[in-house]
Picture (tube, one colour):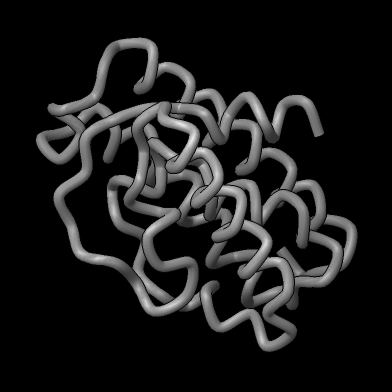
Length: 136
């Protein structure tokens, strides 16, 4: 859980509008106490969503910087269907390129680095879970 708290404090600049589930927490990516609380609330909202509607929603660039969606995939990996695991792995695999691309220009080098490391970690974990339960 300490890593979750640490990664939820990643800061960045995001300009996109809020998604349906997780609303402002995905986009509020500075290190203010308010944003940290919003990211935690967004993660809790995603984890409480029994239908996991957030899985199929598009991932904005800011969500890679905040880490909220990736932490949700990480924490719910045992509950996800094989299709949902594949969606999560695809999203995590896209993280490094998105963070290093034009959409990530407002991020610091350390924010990109932390986001890339989290994306790679989540991709590995989801891949391992898929190998255990799914036809890969």
